[in-house]
Amino acid sequence: MEYESFFNFEQEPFSNVPDPRFFFSGPEHAKPFLRIMYSAHRMKGLVVLIGNAGTGKTTLSRKVLFSLLKEKEYFPGMLVLTRDEYPQFWLTSKIAQLLQIENGSTNTINKVSKRLFEMKNEGRKPVIIIDEANKLNSDTNLEELRSILNIEDEERRLITFILCGMPSLKEQISRNESLKQRIAYFITLNSLSEGSTEDYVRYRLKVAGAHDEIFTRKAFEEIYRWSKGRPRLINSICDNALLEGVMLQKKPINAEIVGLAAESLGLEVEQEIK
Image 1 (tube, one colour):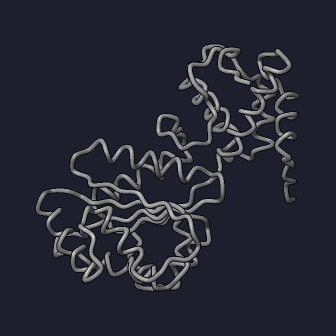
Image 2 (image 1 turned 30 degrees about the horizontal axis):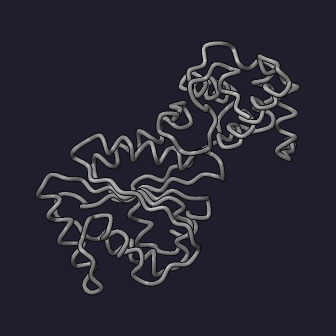
């Protein structure tokens, strides 16, 4: 069952697929984005972005990638980790592929070094985003990353890495003191405030082509109460609330419908610690 026609949307507003068009530049995400872009421009070497599940790390990283791709001076790439263990030299090999280095099993780090100097002479700035970087569990993987960061000249670093992951990433990097000392910025992505949650929902509705008031004031309060400002949960709650609205043939969406949507997701309201 589709709700786009019922609410007069041009497209789905609350998909959890990371789409740069839906990036909300609220106060919680605008500053991290600007810091990352500044680091890429200045070739700072290593930026670490952490946040709890659902806070928008992946969407932010896609926005960064999309922005870098639009500028000719950058040579961006993205690596999304899907497993918890990787063999020795796997990371170096993948980075070499992103830098468009021909396949080869020997002297990969030397080839990476040669390629980075070539790119500097061409006026290009390679930036590699590693999403789910907390899956780099082994000390070997972290040491490979450190080795590549060591490739530099007297002017600047020759590559910038943006590591995005869960809070455990901080502890993992701390195991390699040399790598830790190379961090230019350590950024924590926080959940949205109640005001930003409403602005976030309204922004996504606007991008989707909405013209009418879709949620009541009390509905926005309920969205925040259930989601605590986590974008992924906000999307899921709003998506289900819109579906409930179609089934009930009711608009705008009120607080009761939002509550039904949250319960259908099996959510529980987090109790505040006093």
